[in-house]
Length: 190
Image (cartoon, rainbow, N blue to C red; front, side, top):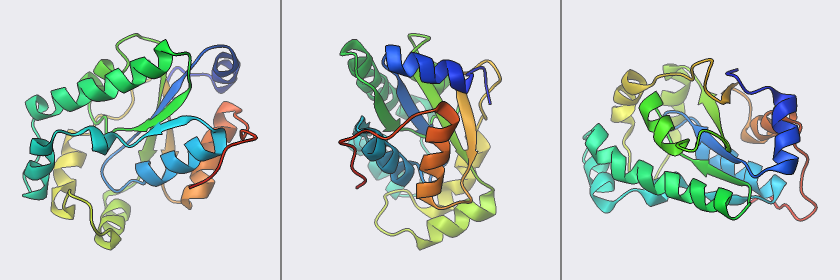
């Protein structure tokens, strides 16, 4: 689970702003679960893929994996979104593959206010999901490179691991339950 105690998180979430970063390989359900979670909680939401420079999108669409150098400008934009939420005292949910610890260090550069939610699944489960997905710029053929780059959360990182087997709504509820979060009176599911 990482170093984040769910009760500590729930107490802090009521007193201090927090941003949940839903992370994992492409096809793990980050966007769907994050949108549900943000809607239920009434928190700001950002689709991290929307922050990619067009050159990254074009490269992935052509079937070429991104390098660390390609990812840094994107990770900086993700970190800036996180910082804006925290600077304004707002909670938020953002998606970002955050495959490597070095990437997560950029996003969590403050050392507080960020909690990673690792959506974990087997290559077979994720591959089956990608085969059903249409209209995304990253082809399923690149899944192997994502699993090769994936560094799971270390015990000293703030975060939890959630299995992607259940339906997205169930996963969103598991995350809320794990952290003791309750739906907002104005929260809407997309």
